[in-house]
Image: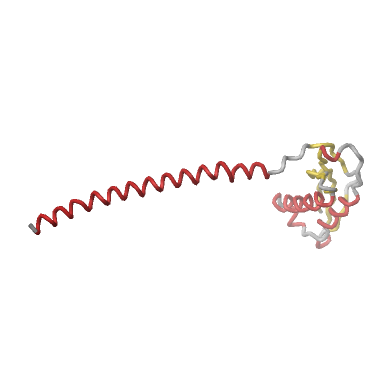
Length: 155
């Protein structure tokens, strides 16, 4: 009789563990599906709404005369550039003096080696664009959205 009790107990244990395993698997699937649904409904929707619309391109304002800027170690940079305005800026003539000053400040004293590589030029250009965008952001209007080099010569 003692052997029969052991056999019944051993037979019941696998049934309970299979049921428990199925319940856990169903709970994981349901919770995972609920979490994914919540992410798509709430978090993804907020990210799309929070993103600002891309500015629309407006006129291009060219700087008439190229700049000659002293670099480090007796080298120099002759650079011309133009500003890509936004549609929001309208057709008003803008004063480019501040953009010229920011360009001179950005490039003065740089090493020629930094500007000889594409990565170095792009890095300096993006820093300059960031400064210009900040300077020409008037009353929450974004007036400048891009910067184009019209000439770029180092010696």
